[in-house]
Length: 127
Image 1 (cartoon, rainbow, N blue to C red):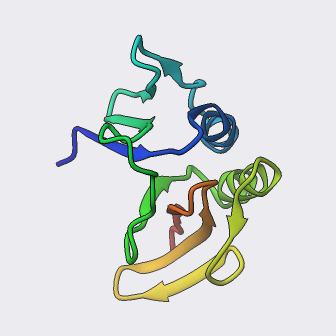
Image 2: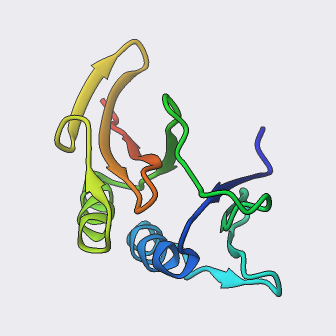
């Protein structure tokens, strides 16, 4: 459904450090810069990117928005969370753990990136 997600960042280099660590914990390669200073994480299933806002205003987070990344295991979600906290992110929501709902058991870990964007690592727990 999605081709890409691009987030605004006030300090792309600082955000790249954060995302290299968190996405690296999920098995992704470090981001690469283009000639405009944007940073891209290119995968077979889509692209995640960070950039300074094109209009020159400060980047800000979306209230009520969450971007979720698939984690291959609970341990990968925990490593993602730890890498985020160690690289300028802040934990939010409940601590990482299992949540049960209509779609079954999910292992969720939440963070805010250096610009306040809400992120989640999600692992579907097999019954």
